[in-house]
Image (cartoon, one colour):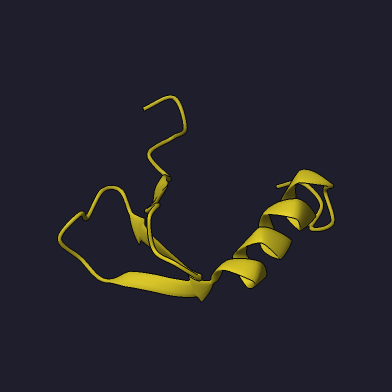
Length: 53
C-alpha cells in the first residue's frame, strides 16, 4: 500500500453518525462518531492542529 498499510475506511450514508474501521480488518469492529465531532476532527487534521509525525 502507498500509505504504509495504515488505513481506515469511513462509511457514508448514516444519518448523524460516521462509522470508521481498520481497512485491513473489514470484518472487525467499527468506531462510530457523531458526524459533527468527526467533521471537527477532520478539519483539525487538515489544519495541522496535531502537528506532523
